[in-house]
Length: 111
Image: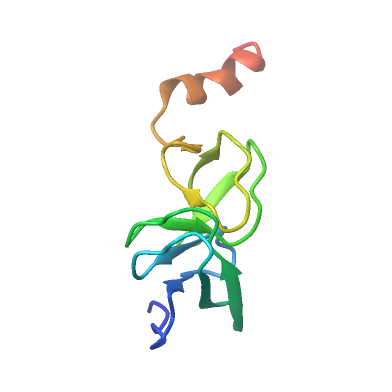
């Protein structure tokens, strides 16, 4: 089953391995939000406007890192994403079903 949502939380992290939390309301820059991560109550300063339902980085994410949400990889970071910033199509790219990504390892192996 999924995690229980805690009343008063501003965002929710679905899996302890996640790099992102999902905003449970509109978040404004400078706001300090509260959510649970790995069993701990965490406070985080919002660095950019985050729309309801969008993702916010709960830790700094380096270029090339496979970003996790729900404990699953949802894409790869195409830019450095500071903690507290919006995580969306402008700074991650999908990697599932990409023929160019699937072909790269085979080509590298000389197949």
